Length: 196
Image (tube, rainbow, N blue to C red; front, side, top):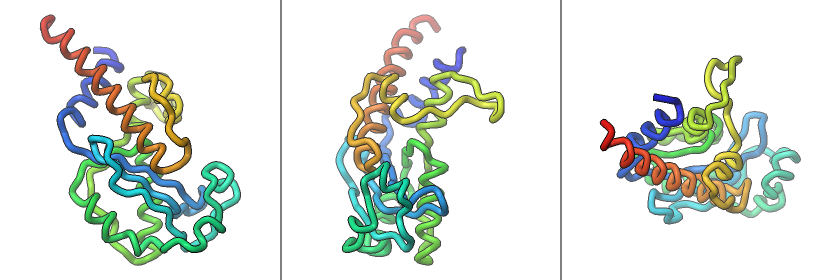
């Protein structure tokens, strides 16, 4: 079986017919990033969380240029502990789809550590790593597949990009990608089952 078919079977097995959440964050930047915005939607596309918080450190200018979230925008926002209980309650024990899971998990860990809060316990599923396999471009250095931007995955599936580099917008884009991928996987399965 080729890697694209494997990837489609993988997403069908991992997410098909299951409840999950989609999460995305926007951050203070690349140096010890902390959360400034978080979006969470459920597997039906309903908004669960859409919050901007004041981080415990300044937002880097480069991050502000990408997201439009500046230190002035967050000056009157609550700090992360104000949304933590709700976030923890929503995420704990759930399957959580994240486009770049390793980065967003790092952001959540850094933010929880700053405020001495336990990291929510959930089962992350990385859409970016999965899409890299589907896309199929080899990365000899990592001995895996080359990671692709969210915009590349959106284009691949013909999905409209929602408010790029906004947590909720990237959640919606990821959710639509997952929906399109599951549709494609189901069609492939329908076609393949009679041949087996």
